[in-house]
Length: 592
Image 1 (tube, helix red, strand yellow):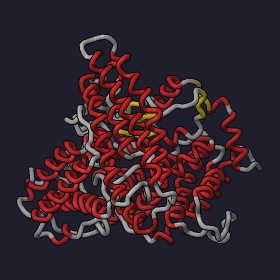
Image 2 (cartoon, rainbow, N blue to C red):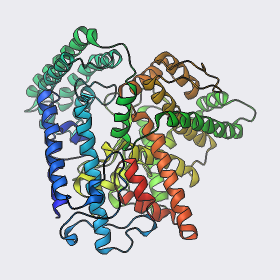
Image 3 (cartoon, helix red, strand yellow):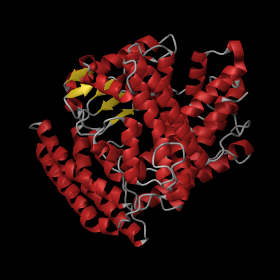
Image 4 (cartoon, rainbow, N blue to C red):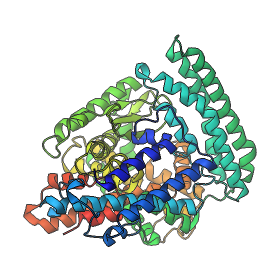
C-alpha cells in the first residue's frame, strides 16, 4: 500500500466514525449501530478531520506541483504523481485515447495523481463550506440532518435480515442525536444563521410522519430477548422526534427568514460542492432555456409518432390512460422493475459493457417509508447489494416513464458507475471506491447520459418509453437548470420565452413554470420539488450539466480517435477513473 492509499484508507475510517449516517449511504461498514453528531462538537470534529487530512495530503504531495494544482476550481493539472516508490501505488487500466495505455509507472503515477486531486478537491470544498458557515444551522428538504437520521434507520430495516441490535442502538441514539442537532440550530440562530422558513416547515412535516414508522419497528421483530428494549427505544425515539418537530415549529420557525433565494455567492459554493467546477451562471441559465426548447422539440417529434397531430399534453394523457402502461400493486410493480433491470443487465453485459459478477443483479425494493427513488451502491464488504429503492404511493402505477428511470438508477447508470467503483480495487483507493455519493455532477451526469445512451443503443422499443425518457429525464432536468439558477439569483425571465417575460423568479412563478413543463403533477409534488431546489442550491443542475460533460468528452474522444474510436473502451476507461468533480473529469476524459 502506498502512503497515499494509506492516508485515504485512514480518512475513510475516521470520516465514517464521525459521519455514520453518511457512511451508511456510502456503504462503509463498521458504524451500523451509530448515528452522526449533528451538534456543534460534531461539526467541529469533521472540520478538524478535513484540515488534518488536507495538511497530511499536502505534505505527501509537496514535490508534485501538478497534484497541488488539483482543486475544486480547476482540477485539470497534468503529469506528476505522488513521490515515492511508484511500484507500490495503485495500477490503472488507462484513459481514453491511451493516456495510460502503456501501463507501467506512467499509469500508476497518473492514478496516484488523480487520487490526490480527487481527495484534495473534496477536503478543500468541505473546508470552504465550513468557513462560510454553510454547515451551521443547515436544514434541507431531502438530504439534511433529519432526513439522514431517518434514512440511517431505514437502511437497517431489512425484514428478516434486519440487524436488530444495531436497530435498537440507532433508535436509542436518536434522542441524543436530535438534542445535538437542536443545540447546533440554536447556536446558529444566535449567529444569525437560520434556514429559510420553507425548509424549517418541511422538516416539521417530516417529524410529523416519522414517529408512526419508528413505532412500527418493534412489532416486526416479534417476541424475543430484544423486544422490551426495542419498545423502550422506539417509544423514546418517537417522543424525541415529535418534540424536535415542535421545537422547529414553535421556536425556530419564528426566526426563519421568509426569503428563499440564497444569492450568487452561496450558489457558487453549491456549484463547487455538487459539481466540482466553476460556472458562468447567467450563461448557464441561458443554456438551460435553449436546452429545454431543444428537448421539447424532440418530444413533439416523438409524440407525433404516437398520436399524429396531437400536442404533447394529449400524448401524455393517452399514455397515462393506456392499460399497457400500468401495473397494479406495489409488489407487482417491484417484480416488473426487477425484470426490467435484469433484462437490461443481460443485454448490456459482454456487448456494450463487461459487467463484474457482483453487479449482474441490482436488487429492486420498495422502501418502508416514503423516500423517493434512489440507488445505493453495494457495501464495500458486499454485505449489501447494489439496490434501487422506489417509493410507491399509488396502487395503480403508470409505467411509461419507468424504463428511463431504471436505466438511470440501475444499468447502465448508477449501478455500473457507482457499483463498479465500489468493486474497483485495481485503479481506485478506498476513498475513491466509497465516495460516489459525494460527486453528483459526475454521477448524476453519467446516469442521465445512461438514459440517452440506451436510446442510442435501441432499448426504447416502445415509443412511449422513448417519450418517457424525454419527458421524465431530459425535459425535467433542463427545466431544473432554468429554475434553480433563476430562483437563487432572482434573475429576470428572458424575452422570447413566452412565460412572464421580464419578471424575476419567485417560488410562485416557479410552480407555474414547472407545471407547464412537467405535465399534470399534483400541486403537492410540484411544491415539494421547488422547495427541494431552494434548500440545495446547485444540486438540481448536476444532472444536465454532468450529462453535458460526458457527451462533450465522448465527442472529443470520437474526433480524436477517428475510426479507432471504441465506445465500449471509452466507457470502460472512463468509469475506471472513479468519482470526481466535473473539471477534473473533463480534463481526464479529453486528455490527448
